[in-house]
Image (cartoon, rainbow, N blue to C red; front, side):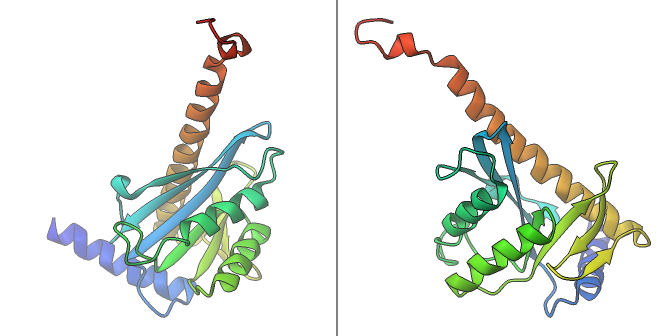
Length: 191
């Protein structure tokens, strides 16, 4: 167990060097927006601490301001709501690194929102290739290839798959609840 923990610590140091971070990312948060043809928009936030997924700290956000499939506005609402919580609140401590499922547009939108809020945390986007696999990371301007770094590729790929799975499950639950409702059940006296 100790050897596994040491290996993860060493990898996080390597990841910090690869991304040019000033601190080792002990807490990582990742975000993804999911919707069904623009409806039932949800944003999932997953958390890793010391390189391990911490499912009890995952958070889901039902997006209220967007119903047209605009991922950037949905992501903006999610980030504003998430960082409205103080870092001292239970389970809401600030991360050392944020990973967004998306490219330059998503990263730059999140940076703009966080700068407005006075919060400065390293942010990278996870860009997929034509086979839906993570090929590179972006800081909004520059790209960092993961092709030659198998360990980083596997780590980032697992994060991207998990955040996608989680945000999709949130959207699907929201859609299923809506499908169960009918305009007939809204009529008083009709059950």
